[in-house]
Amino acid sequence: THRRKHGGDRRQGIGRALGLKGGHAPFVVDATAGLGRDAFIMAHLGCRVLLVEQSAVLNLLLETGLQQAALAPGLAATISRMALAPGNSLQILKKIAEGRLQPEIVYLDPMFPLREKSALVKKEMQVLKVLVGDDQNSTPLLAAALACATRRVVVKRPRLAPALATERAPSFAVTGRSSRFDVYLVPS
Figure (tube, rainbow, N blue to C red):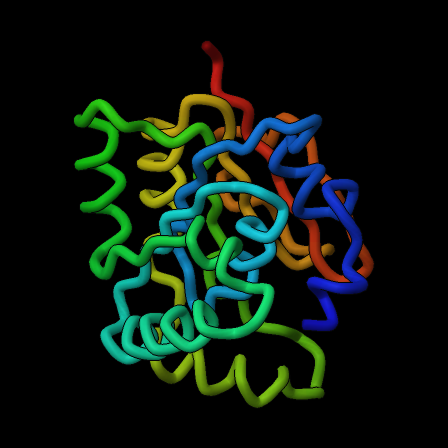
């Protein structure tokens, strides 16, 4: 709620990374939905969002959360722009790329790499890491996202972390205080 009310409009980092301008509402596949927070913000900003998550536990949490949020006052319009697709992101992106309905944007938020700091990450992220495990397939996932998206792929990374792909540099990055969005533009 705080992020929705006070997080800003399309000029916030995620909106700029998605290239949101004017009244355009792109179709976005959040291929690493996790807890659905970024997907919710994208939907709140007007995007149509398909949430893909491979963890059965997280899918159950997301499904329950979407059902409850649809009943909350003032959230029905945002939730109506969100759909859940349980399954393996690589397989789903490959199926989408072969089909007629291709997303303009694919959003990736892979599990952040191990930190060198002694302080632990927030408890919810510790639980998420236990449920999902370490990031094993971010490089093939980026390749599948680039083959699937028609406009751009946005990858959320820690601010000081290296880019996800070593063979292809991001087109540009939108940097915040603790994280950044690497944007890979897809040629038309």
